[in-house]
Amino acid sequence: MFKLIKLEIKKYKLFNYWKGVLLANIGFIACLFMIYTLEKLDENIPFEDFEMVTLIISSTIRATFVIFASVLIVKLVIDEYRNKSINIMFTYPIKRKKIMLSKLTIIVTFTFLTVMLSTVFMNGLVYVLDLFFDLIPGEIKIEALTKSIVTAFFHSLATAGLSLIPLLFGMPRKSAPATIVSSIFLVSLTSSTSDNFTLFSVIAVPISLGLLGLIIGYLSIRNIEEIDVKVS
Image 1 (cartoon, rainbow, N blue to C red):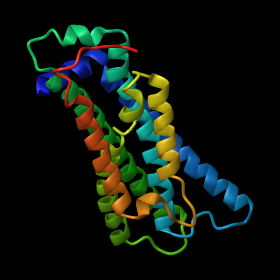
Image 2 (image 1 turned 90 degrees about the horizontal axis):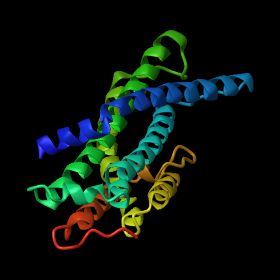
Image 3 (image 1 turned 45 degrees about the vertical axis):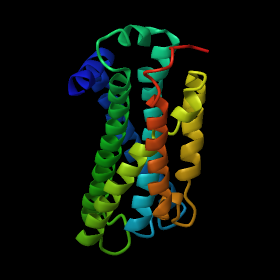
């Protein structure tokens, strides 16, 4: 399956998507800078503590890359059904399930890596900048940074699974708009913050959503060997 993954990456030039990831991280930095500047102009404390900053960062990053993942779902799965190029792939002497699994593996892995690396980068950047510019009241202890990285790992795993949920809405009619709109609704539900709280703050929620996404991914390819390829 590793060869299939390499072929998919080469076919769609997916390494170019890392340019988008880089731009997204620049956007995250700009967003934090804007929040800091506006709050300072109003003579408010921009960030009460490191936990508040990490909450803003993780919520923004998760929202961005879940939508990013939905775009990948459209490109790697939905569009192939709609333009019927999937028919050609299914003539290869390779099990259909293996072909589809390679596509879903790319989406899940990409989501995990982008969320994890971006979160660690942003949290680390805030930590370093605070050493020089005192962005946050009090001292950010190394233990707090370590805890944020551990949390980011588990949240990244959950987000990777969660990123497959839009398949539930996009696959029945092979609809790109349904896939992307459902991902936007999903992130608005899971990433909105209030009083330093998001749904991801309740550990059972990300675990449940992550597992639900993986189940949906499995169900979407479970009977792929038996069904005919149809486009609505």
